[in-house]
Length: 157
Image (cartoon, rainbow, N blue to C red; front, top):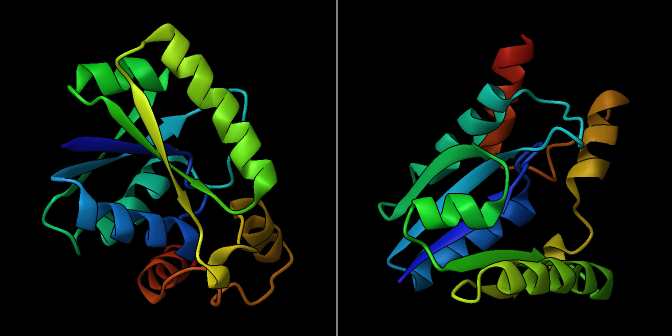
């Protein structure tokens, strides 16, 4: 079975990596889909976000990545995928993701969503908070992997 894990990944956090790791063990193929969301400004441009996903994807032979603009269901259909992977840290995330899942399923009844509940060490990590720590020149190394941190440090020189 093939699945898609969509998100902006701005930046890719340890929480995202946990979902990728867990999903890669379950599905035959996992496509990590980096969304271009014009209504959501990002700290990192699309190429940087794709690079971060590429760095992590290299660890798994069954994980690929790409980017898309528009509806996730359209990108999933284009790639012959009928299962969306989403992460949830808490009940607020779950409620939000459930609404999206219901909308997706209403637009395409052949598309299902599966939720991975974040493990305790990752429940407090959000990309928004990591961006805030980065903006304030704080130590963000506990929230992203060493590979991702090394890339960001090289880029920012």
